Length: 420
Image 1 (cartoon, one colour):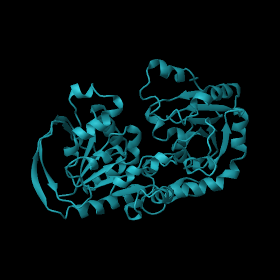
Image 2 (spheres, rainbow, N blue to C red):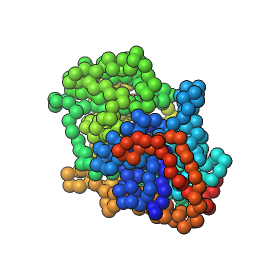
Image 3 (cartoon, rainbow, N blue to C red):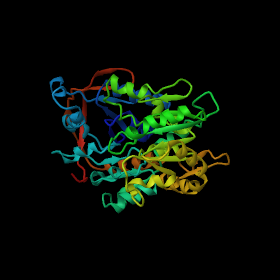
Image 4 (cartoon, rainbow, N blue to C red):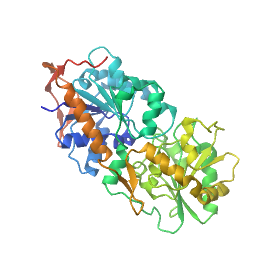
């Protein structure tokens, strides 16, 4: 019997590509008895749709139903935590837990046994939140490259022996699908991607959005894609969305607040210039090194600051800058940043190389394969412990890929030496 692997998919669809390809690979190999836990039926549909896009069988998904009276009585921002607490015992009935967010470390802090928790961080960015103290609760962390591993180790939140470099899972999955640069507009203009962060304390949107749109429309040389981080508009009403979507102009400006195209690298692969602030998507864009322009809307003390390391990869413009001149400068001076971009991408994405046509490839096993190998070895080491049967009767529902039905199964718990 393969190790039981539970995967809480509670962070949103924007995280799926960073870890679910590994879970699907483990299931394809029969290397794990896999269950993906989702907060609701819509999330389950999104997981299955993503599996279908990758050509993988529909995975077993467990819907973490919470009583309605409880669900409606708690603030939206706490619902993820409530779901974890409500289903903690069921989530922990396995040999290994794999997650992409850090809220799941709560499972380690609740009473009762918790199996080892493995973590594949979502994103490749530089912000300090990506290297925070909750990492110390993971038994193993799988990162995309040397840059992230070194910073985690230097911060003292991960022991070097518990941090492995696999390469970037999302990038590998995109390359597997044969993705390449596709024109986003039916004209010969160069395309700018504007990708502001969702956090208002860091985002450039309030100061720069209207100015950027006006300058692009006044200059016949550019197209514009406005595609902020999907979390920005997640809770917006129709009026708030309209303030952004009104900027769309057929054939010139695309505004995309949440579609799959804003997650699957369609825009980062198809643009000629990246404009943004601190989103980790800049590293996905630099899979094909190209010009960058970073907008400093908050007078950041960014030089030498690791939280803004990406700003060394292109031009930086403050709130007083002329947007048109900044765009021109980003293109004309790109040759100055190209060598550093290539070095940085290799630090961020283990094993990345480029062929003679400058298309990205991976040296040796790709990251999905490498991560699946590491998790398989880790999980197999866990099942050497005795398992004793224990009855569980979850009141949630499970989706096996064909139908949703009431779920009742005998699960067994194991004794583990993992720290609690």
